[in-house]
Length: 591
Image 1 (spheres, rainbow, N blue to C red):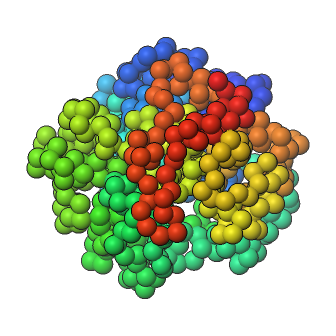
Image 2 (image 1 turned 90 degrees about the horizontal axis):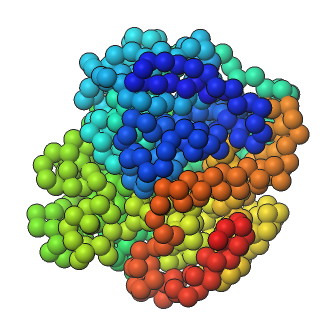
């Protein structure tokens, strides 16, 4: 039952959709509302666009893997449905305030915020918050509404309509991709504030307690869960450098040895500002907050796994303090680290090739904070150009720059190289909302030799048998589609992929038991996969309606092979990729 909030008129209404089956109050319902309530072809900044924010029927429940909130709207970056998720306590805050979902249309006359409290939604002026970062905004709103309030806020990047502006919840948890922060900004919406502590009800508390106890015990037996729980954490890159070609170096232009170092665990000592604390109901403290020594209080330094690659090696930088500082600054200004890193890397390669005189240089860590600030505020010609993202910047610079924009559907690629993991490449190309590194489990995990053998049985249950990582054939396409469908089901229900099958503790049986325990209705693996298919179908239908971009990767992935190391020669053969893509479509019932 979403609240329909019209910022233009100030009206708030409730829409009863509980009789419809299969949407679980999450992104599927949001996509239905977008299709029903908005005409095709709207500019993403048009006041008539619909912004959907939801915990749904499961998100925000005090149980492992149920902390996600979804943010959904037509993306200013891709022109199709942009869906991103925030971990942490915001979903629980939304439920505690008496709401499961908000559908926001219109545009406020002046900068405003929404207050959700006691099952009511009201709109309040926020002009005094203009220009503030997400931390200062959160602090100001908590001073007004209580320190236990939960806040989703934008920074200057969202106000200035940077096309990859993010929303940051409760200081450290970003809803990062596809420019949802710019949609907030276009609506003159600075923040959503949730006040209240009513817990989400569960049908079978004892079953939830048993699953939570199992999860807690698994932190010592599941290697990825243990990695997430410990220091430096899942996002703290340490140890031996990955094999050449595994991750992007200098805009994917160096598919051999990087020459860049990986930090050691001791390098993170003195840089941990705090752990944010585990998500509500989950014993695993996945997201840590880091900042360079002497940086002061940087509560916005929540470190996601992609930040080190996107703001580090992709820019030719291996200075840990530079990366940690840039990550915290991105969260405070409200910028997606992946798209920012991809756009800066594009600009650096163009400058190196003489296509962008005066552009930034690979390896210049000292210039990074200034570049980030210029983009967030659209300062100067360079800041304004790069605020548009790599694809639009390439169009401005001319056809000679186009080969260096590493984008799909207008969104910058995550920094896990698809030449080495072709299933990831298929996911980047075909996922109807645009490329995400967490859209499906990675190919290397299912390699018969180098993979995570304990996960093979789980993957096999959905038809994803182990296969050599470099194998690119029709079966790779079918396997990738099945993995994408599974994790799409997790997204549809706001289940955390970082807690779930096939590689994390919550097996398929645990997931279905957890949903059944919360909702009180029998829930099966077929139900989970059906939700995943329904979400993918709805996103693809919306993309078709809006004329979304093709399911293609940048030419570099097909033309420039890895040159060194165990993956030497890895490249995505066009014909093989096409056959795998056809099999992917066939598996999902698409043409």
